[in-house]
Image (cartoon, rainbow, N blue to C red; front, side, top):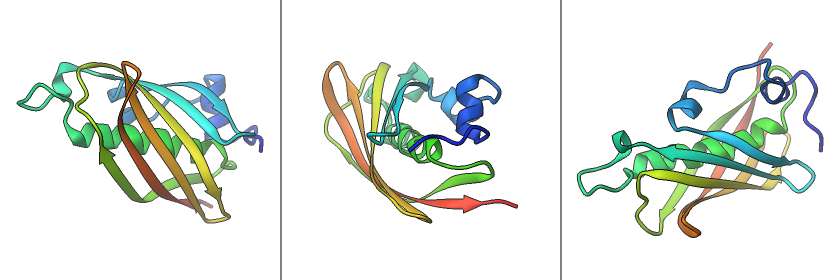
Length: 142
């Protein structure tokens, strides 16, 4: 499966489009995409502003990172004027995350015409911090 040449994702990879503001806020950067195997890897950076009173990354921030990495994988498969909307995101928190770098990984479970199923993981220091399953809808404009 190849990303269409004029899709948002293809333009982003070429530097012709800017990443979404939320990705920038999360310190996100795509590191590797393998559409043949249906995987995407991204890094994130949790700033001290993301910490809760216990000094750990707030769960909603981890959810946003998982939403970002899973939705970006779906976005990588879309044509021009198609976008991804998350319908459902189920998250499990496995251990606390600290300020600093996190690795996001996504795997395409099923790519349907209108609905996609994706799994995602967040890693820090070689340990799994949180995982998620996402259901995404393909939205066509124009």
